[in-house]
Length: 225
Length: 406
Image 1 (tube, rainbow over the protein chains, first blue to last red):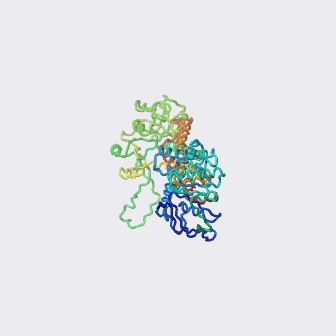
Image 2 (cartoon, chains in turn yellow, red; image 1 turned 60 degrees about the horizontal axis):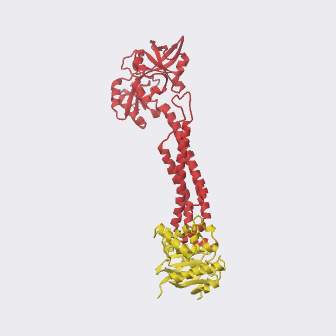
């Protein structure tokens, strides 16, 4: 039986402004190690909201969330920050690289925060990740000197630096053209194959979703399949 | 996060300017204060023992047993002259010298006299002084602009007169002047020096001679002393000491604080003004920092969001901003101290020569370490507070809202 990375039990979420409105209803899902899962659905169906709850950044929900079989519900901000730092890697639609730092430093940042390895080791690991993504030549450039696809690759390297249990993506290919989208998909696919990485990607792109192992389709705050 | 260098530098310069001004202003103001206080206080004894002409505090009527239970009205009481002489002065001086609080004691004879020049008589005062004690306590030699203080000791029948007096009588060092006492005695004294204290009233009337010469002038014995001047290690003891001596020696005693209260007030007001201006400058600098950090947070929303998403907690973000403003505060503050010191040194070199202050050549500056400590402490405190509010705001930013907004 494969190892369970992420599990939710009866998650409900409401928005209160301007009126009480249920965004998510009874979300029960589970992601195992090595699974490549995509979440699809129309705009406003609650898929991004779900992702932020799963990522621990949004704590205002009912139900329970488990990562690696430990409950993350009602934990302190500090505790959740550590969990995010160590176990979750993020790739967003927008790259969110820090403009002041070069590529290498951007990749290293979560590692430095974690403080598990020495700076030299983090630097080495960051370079390895950049090499795997064919970005080693750009390591010392500033983010604004890179193309969109390259920035997204840097963001992926940053997500990988702490060897997370799961990588979450919020439309990571949303801003990219076909060629770059395929490339990002290939990178993700390689991670699954080579490192048995768990991936949870929210996407609008049916072509992208169809290539993943499992598609979770959402509508009106419920999981359909 | 550490970008926005230009704005940070500007904020830092604000702090630097504030601190530099604070240091300079305080140094200059207090330099002046010390100078002015010194002008008065260094030359006045901390406690002066003397006999004052005044009515006896206890009138015979109130001693009378017959009228003990009556309400007594005693009009037209006349003051009683107990004589200016302090009785038993040698014993008092000996006792004072044994007092641990006392640095030194200088006995003095003051006598009103007339200086004769031609047919004109100029009123003045002769101070018979113990030259060594006077020099030790009041640095009298600083105020001798011509001649030598020690000559009072070396030669008999010599006198040092105030500059104003010498100009009026048109006499110079080496001339002999005639002096008449109130009792009619007349004596010729040779001038061995001209003094200038810087206060016209003094320079126009004062003269100094040795204790012995003054006693001879007045026809009194060598025990005749009219004033005992006491200098204490700590001037703040003076009021208490004056009270104690009054009771112990049965003379009048006045402390420097009472005698020069208007100077104290002046100094205090000047200090308060300079502190107020300095602190205002720093607070303005603090608002500058607050503004810049606030702007920075709006600009850096995305960065804050991603830092939080990748595992930085609200506290970490808060510390980034607080440390940023602390760096501005410390660096700006240190530069401020440096510039403040430089500015003070420059002012210290500007010539400031006035007729009335013979010992002063340049503007006075007080380089007390205390001001530098206050300056840097205040810089750090204001910048921390200025940074605290933006930092708290940054720590509360919800990354979801920002990432969602894209």
